[in-house]
Image 1 (cartoon, rainbow, N blue to C red):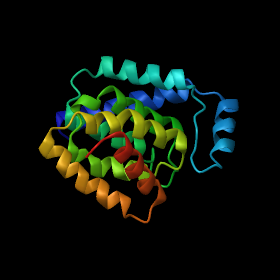
Image 2 (image 1 turned 90 degrees about the horizontal axis):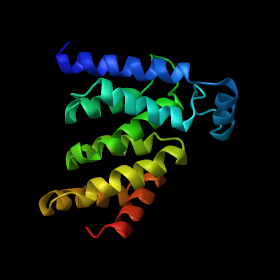
Image 3 (image 1 turned 60 degrees about the vertical axis):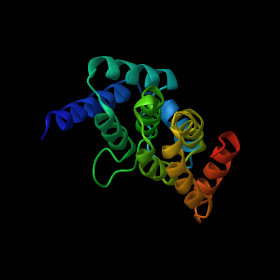
Image 4 (image 1 turned 90 degrees about the vertical axis):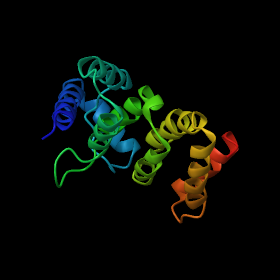
Length: 176
């Protein structure tokens, strides 16, 4: 493994362990009921998720662009093969991206598209759209915005209603 991959693995382990330690069964049941049991839940509070990401960013200070998107992807995925995604891990990925949105590039839209397609909850899709995609697109230069416009046009024509809604919202918020 490379140094960056080792750091990402350690960061995933730190975030996952901390979120599990911060969990409560009654919050986990609430999340499960609210989301129709589409995802597992540790029952961590939103404050605990935000604090965990903040602590991880302090502990793993050298997260560059690639390490940040690798960490977000690892948190978004399943904690182990055959398991379901965990809501708090996905929320931690969103908080991480919110915190590091200045590092993101137009080429990250494909990864964010995958997150939107698999969000399974408005509680993940909405902040991903408002707090990651809008600032990302707002910060792009003219050439990168044109490239992003091509991606958004594809989203607009995609059969996935989540992507159609994201494209419509972004086009309303940002002139591309």
